[in-house]
Length: 566
Image (tube, rainbow, N blue to C red):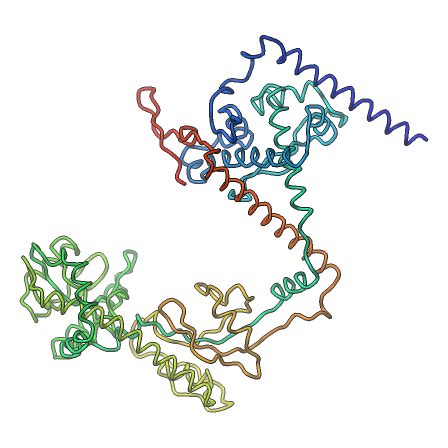
């Protein structure tokens, strides 16, 4: 009996508060004078949805509620906040319209009762907005020290935090509540099956580990320097491709200022290097210069020793360059030489260079010469891709024949293959500094345990998907995996399965909750996008683009604006 009396008393208090708050609507905003009492900016136009206006005041209220106006214009623009806020308001009105269409009704009394009982409001987050933007049920500080609803405090919050009149707040919350009723209806229509839950559990718990080798065409570009005869032979079967490339790049071969083509070998020196480090680097450069002048192949020396990883794989070729593109000391030496000459050691802020001049050109390059240069690049790209594919196929065949990954890794690194069961010997100290490792060189690598989402950075799921089709008894794929420009050969080393025996009630509850929420959000998002698509196609959504602009600079009291990036 006491519980019933307490409940009745509480309902009486809430009802009284709602009556008082509703009276505020009429006394302050319902009479003939109400037209001029809306908050500043409330009559402006931000958007119109099926003839209903979202005012500039509506927009600024939500923008301020999210404290977005406390960010700098650059920060707000970077996060695209204005568009997210306005999209949320548009979607709110679209959902509210649908809610009314299916029979939902919400009054000022309803929204005020919700505020007094829960101390929360509803706020629609745009379906495209990131989760960092608040949305859904938002708590509002409208209670006194005893935890009771404080009407005066609520009015202050509405006026100063929401920047709205009580009536404007009520009307906005009617729309928000209708939108939430529609979302609740959509959520209620979503379910997840036991099969979906277990499949999600498997995706979460299942793990695989692989050993793999990446075969990159960029590596094989440095393994073969094509001759003019090879390129000419290739051109005869690819005339259309070469002509198209020439047409696309014709501007690069006309009216040229004097250009020099060179190769170089770089020994880098960090700006913070000690004198001893600089002396060591210079000694290496001097030794390489002596080898080049004794007649050793300059391209091979560059591939094996240059620390300019961008050009070393192409034999140090830096292509044609005009004056001013390279460091001053480099330019001076390069343009002072004759084709075929090799410079002394040249010092730049990057380190020590040895330069070999290949030739000069200027004016208009003959079409045949230009096409040969372009064809060389096209041939190198096609041939290196073919070499990478062939190497991947050959390696997979080795694995299928019983060769171990360890033995293949030893061969790729230039080490002797270990005897079966032997303990690998410690690497000997090199007699001189080792040449820089080519980052694109094929080598055996091992992944951490991974899920079906991807085996390693860059894997969009193809490697992981193939790996989970294998077993430890049959650990090799049927063919190398083509990923981007590269080819991947791998061997499954471990596959940890998820079983129903390990599928606990806690797992079931947790995954069901998460999967249900995900599917509900997807259903709401799809529904809202459809509503907006239809309304936009019918011309029933109009956006005032000025609302989406951000102030950028202030000069003499005038502010220039920049539109948001969509």
